[in-house]
Amino acid sequence: MGEGFLKPFWKQPAVEPVRGAFRRVTAAAMLALLTVISVSPATFAADKSRVSGVNPYDPFRNRTDRGRGAMSRDQELEFAEAAHQEIAKKNKFITDPRVVDYVNRVGNRVAQGSERPDLPYRFYVIANDQINAFTPGGGRVYIYSGLLKKATTEGQVAAVLAHEVGHNVGYHLSATIKRQQTTGVFVGILGAILGNGALGTLAQTATVLVANGAMFSRSREQEREADYLGLYEMREANYNTGEMVNMFRLLESLGKSPGSIDKIFSSHPPPTERAQNTQREIDQYLEGSDQGGVRTTTEFAVMQRALGGITIAPSNPDDQDPKNPPRNPTDTGGQPSGNITYEDAEEVLNRIGARGARPLEGARGDILGGRQMNDTVVVYQLRNEVRAVADLSGRTYPLANTKGNGVFPIAPDDVLGVRIVPVSRRAKAQVQITVRDQNRREFTYAWEWTGRAFRYLGAQ
Image 1 (tube, rainbow, N blue to C red):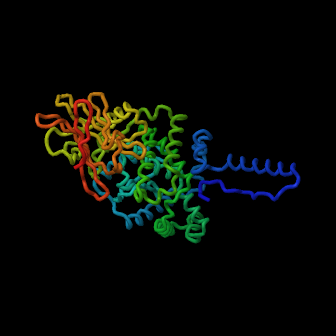
Image 2: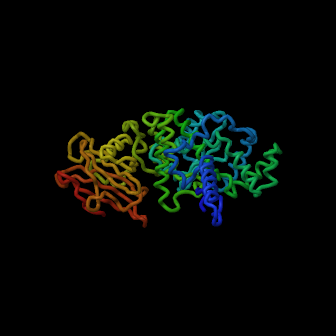
Image 3: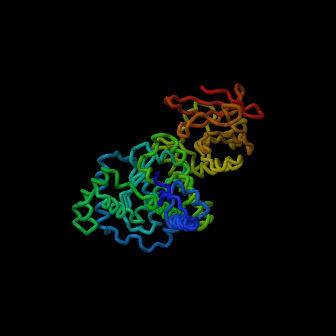
């Protein structure tokens, strides 16, 4: 049976001629079953009980045994350096300072609010379009450029980095090595380390573990603990904790695209469970922390533009880097589309009741030809559907390419840009959304304002 299912632990007894004996056996079996359920960590199939049962983060609360029996600090740093050398052989790192400096700033911000702020934290960006992040311990953290491109706020980037810092705080490196030792795979090398052997064996161990992939295989309880620790690191760093929940929702949606998420994520609990666990912790112990704090910044938009990603602009549209304007592939003349902020997008989505929706791209302009420049268009994802809505001075109009269902036949990462074309003497106002299909061809959906609603014109 699957990893997350409770396996049967008794066999059906033979026919019992005495009814009383049968009742005693049944009662004992039920008691044993209840005991197992009450003490066993639930995963996957038992996740439904997490919402109404015991808080799954309770085992990590007020722990005093973190680091007990772990490698020494010097050993951990030595191991992390050796692992880095092996990782560097197998991967290409992003070197653009707009990306590297940004990730290190965000990473160190959450690390300084952790229980191990003294580690020499270093954050690296691997040039890979898959979704992944990992740490070998010792304050070394690696994140794929694909994950940075797909995030929609700085808070979501902070959530990923805080989770990896949480692995460092939880001393999960030592636990991982011990687990590999007990499997018999690395018997001989690992015993020397855990028995305070020479540091020279660390490089050999790191090479074997990184090459084998076992270095980044954590238990599900370790992943939950890293989520728990990362959540509080975000709170201490004054990030909006709700962005960790949003990151898990993003991972859930990205997981629907085959090959987009690296196999390392297979050791993590399902994103839906992680979102539920984190939201529950916020509601019970961090109430209000998902209502305030930093969600995104101008530097986040600059970083994504440097990577070639597209996102909704940060809170202050006046605080943009003039040397790196947002990409607008459909802007071929006329009035350009302005920036729409993340908060603007959320306001529109809340107005239409799109609870849990994730903004993908937006534009601001003036469809009706005045000077207010407050009309907006938002493309967003709701569950596994991509939709769009236009907001004209506070009144919302869904944009659809079929009879009113508002669903585009595109994947979330295929949205390239949004443009508002204002009304003129020669043409009616239009909304244009440019996408890329599965064959990498670009085309544009267009809608025309009729004075009462938006009429779909087709794709070109």
